[in-house]
Every structure is written in C-alpha cells, then in structure tokens.
Image (cartoon, rainbow, N blue to C red; front, side, top):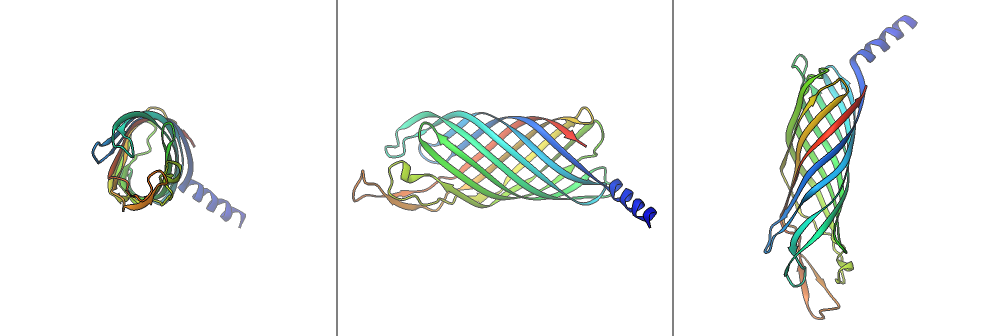
Length: 252
C-alpha cells in the first residue's frame, strides 16, 4: 500500500507543476474620450505583475494573475462647467486580479485555450482635485502558444469584454448636490502579448492591452452654486490603450 501511495504521488507530481512569476513593467498609456473638446491623456506608467500557474502537460489547469499600475501623465481636456480647453496632469493608481481556466491540447506544441474573469480597479485623479474611481469586472477569451521550452518565443492573443463598469466621479466633491454612480457600457477590446524566454527563468515580454467603453446613461444633478439649474451628466465613450514591456522571473 505504501508503494502504491508513493507511486500515485509521483504520478501526480509528474503531471502537475506549480509556477510563480513576478515582473517589473513599463508601459505607454493612452486614454481618449469622445466629445467637444475631446479629452486625451498620454504618458508612461510603471508597475509590477505577479502570477501563479498550476501547470499540467495537457488538459485543464488554472492560473491567477495580479497587476499594479501607477503613473502621472499629461491631460488635455476642458473645464467641467465652462467647457474651456485646459491642460493638467492625471495620476493613475490601479490594481487588477484575475482567475483563469486554461485547456492545453495534448501533442500540440503548446496550444492553449484560455478563459478568465477579472476585477480591475483604478483611481483616475485629474490633479489637483478631480477624482474618478473605476470598478470593472471583465471576461477574457483567448488563445496561447507556449511550448514551455527553456529558451524561445511564446505568446497569446484574444478579446476582453467588461460585464460590469462602475464609475464613481465624486460629483459631490466638485460642486454637485448628488453623487450617482455612472455606468459606461462595456464593449469588446483586444489584447496580445509576445515574449521571449532567454533563460529558463527569465523572459522579456511585449504586450498590448486596452478597454473600449460606450457612453454611459445620463444622470441629473443640481448644484447650490447654480440654483434652479439641472445638469445632465454622463461619461463619454472612451478608449484605453496600453503598450508595454515587462521583465519576468519565474519560480519553479
């Protein structure tokens, strides 16, 4: 019995492996809102990523990935009440967590199907004092190619779809009497990455990620500074694009 238990343990160990990874990230970030005048934000962000993969040679496996982002970038837009064009700086701070299910095809040189569900939260602080908090629940569907060789290329691509988007614009902190949550519409966006493993544990990865948001449903608000006036407030359609590179280390 002891022999059988030991043999079973060896078989399980041979078929499944735990792999952690950490990376240092740098990206070029771009935010654009429709409207007149439009809002454009561009600049660098830095951060870190971490992940866990319950590896198997084939079949179903699962993974977790986390991500932190920070950066202060250029803002070109307009004042909220007057509509006059202005420039400023915007500071982003964000945290993402995602669980993934992966199916690795046998004898396929590393072809995998991927599905994920994640929660992405970030603070968008248009300095000095306009803050917007975004909460996004998204689904991911894609295709990976990773031979898991000690050196060589790997990558993946697919689509993301926000299934819930909530925006707290802190309206009561910028002169309004109410603070209703805005809900931009989640639209499909793409993602892709291409990496090169130059040592068994070290990789460099280039990536693209983004979101597409449709215009939110309008809400009304009043302001003590403008008695008798009702303001119609909405979040314009927006697109988010990030092009980045990361240096990744894997623990086996």
